[in-house]
Length: 141
Image 1 (cartoon, helix red, strand yellow):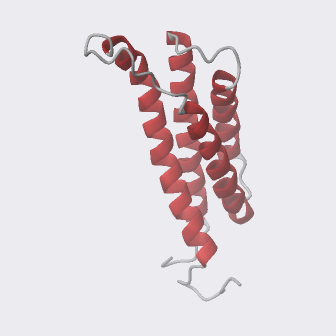
Image 2 (cartoon, helix red, strand yellow):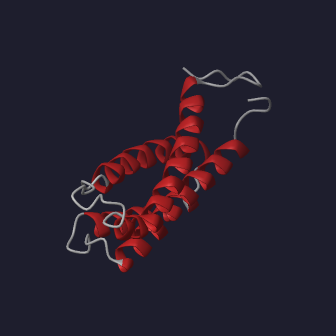
Image 3 (tube, one colour):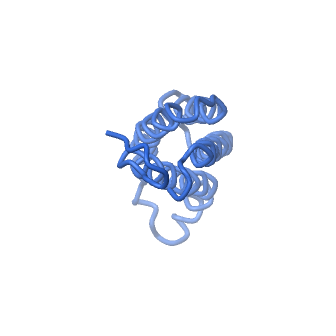
């Protein structure tokens, strides 16, 4: 139950804000991972790690990003009723889903670029949602 006292913060508000912060940084880290993975894959044989293949951890990250993004943006939308964050999230999720669960998942340069852009869009969605929600929090929260 939400309290209407000025300066009060509900548990949902705390979860949503923490979720957006985690989502923003995790998405940024994902974008960095996607940008650097081609370099790492190229260097692995040089370092004697050719037999070590990175299992497609991308798929787990994409599912996690989807669940976290939809959850926190839904909570934020209930407060601020703004669609801007959703526009970033949907565009970012479209890029990462297509490049993770289709034939485009080939670890090429194109794949890395699209995944990096998708991760940055998802991070932007969390940042926009956090800012929109912050605008509508009671003073002192």
